[in-house]
Image 1 (cartoon, rainbow, N blue to C red):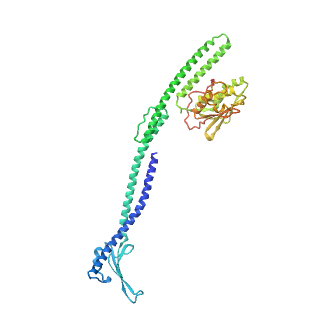
Image 2: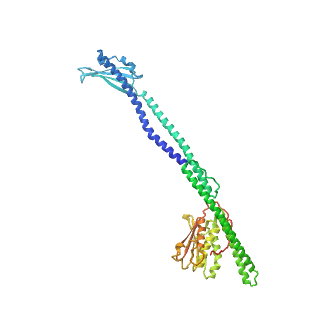
Image 3: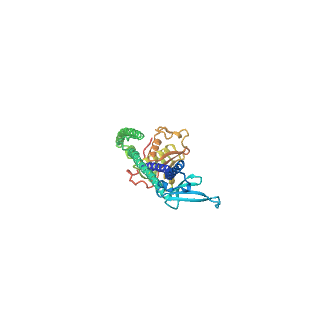
Length: 446
């Protein structure tokens, strides 16, 4: 920004220098020449006044007999005074013969001259060499250009100081805003003496305080919720543990299966809480094929029990997304579970790449009756369900996908086709090892 301000202000100064400097240079050049002409005209005027005074005193002489030495003091150094007169001559073509007399320096070349008539047939011409005028003109032009350059340099110095005074506070505000975006809410927000910038700083300080308070309250709520859920899961685990002592082997088998589900639900709860408290930018490369195949393995027994099948269509192997494995797995698990409960026919999980957008598309479809038209507009709203369940699954799935920079949408109502579009890992981000391996876990969502 500083460079932009400097360029703009210096360009304005140079433009003003050119706009005023060029005309002033021309005026200065012409002024030197005009001053020289005025000086010569003033000297000739004094000579003509002397001639008129002599005539008034009765001492008039013929112009050709005029004594030019009387005017020598009025002739400039290196100047030349020329008297041109006409003498009657019957042999001349026009009846007159031209005669001249001069005093001063005889020179050739271009000259600056002025003339005055002192009689019917006589003229006085006073001239100086053009070279005598050039130094004055050049001196005036150089002085003017020097003044313009000094003005531009002074303006550039003022522009530099002004740009620094504006850019440094803005850079400081940008650094503090970036720190706030990273989760650092401890920075103070000072004032800078610039009214507009101080208002921005004050607004960001208020936002900083409000965000810090909300995060603190959310942390407390998450802690309370996790504590309550863990307490209930522990109680369920203890009751199931007691059932493992039953004499009926079937009851023992179901109790052990229930205990396994409780343990997995507790692990998922720990992972989600850890993810909510972790750095939002700490994402990793996720193997889409591994996630989808694990998901199919988890749900395949349930689909077989319902007389249905589930399969994967992988257009391109080796596709990696950029996000958190737990979030993507949980979102896809919601879609597959919905297909199992509400759909029909074969469930297909299609994976394809969108190279132009650097995204990966994961479509979950089945051959069921689809989504009712009255339910489709609000299907992702929290609490909305078409089967009498809690209605939190799709809302949670969309939130998880969007948290990793993706998008979940219903692209077809009949048959129902849900599409997850998630960022592709292109290798631009530094590789990181995931904090947890992909596990074969299926958690009920409703």
